[in-house]
Image (cartoon, rainbow, N blue to C red):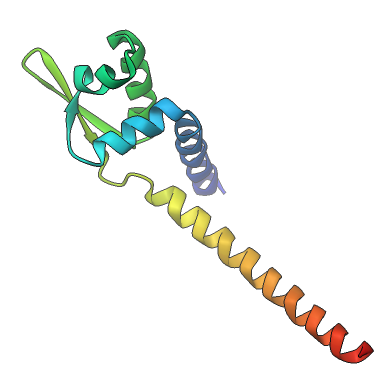
Length: 115
């Protein structure tokens, strides 16, 4: 039970981090390779302080890692970015697919009986 709670806390952090379009843009950009905080802030015109807050949320969720290189903070995608969320989505998609398949079979069966 405790393991499940920990897993859901991680999912909550992941989905919360993904709920913001700025953070999704950061992940999209990092998908093309590492970038500094300045490079991430430039396209949006956001302040470095504002962008650092977004990066920190992504980092807490395990979606991004950062490393201090001289005076620059480099960001890259986390090693397991989105893996837990993908497993959760896949599990629930399969459950819904089975239910929808059962509903479709029932509808076809019902059609055949009244025709």
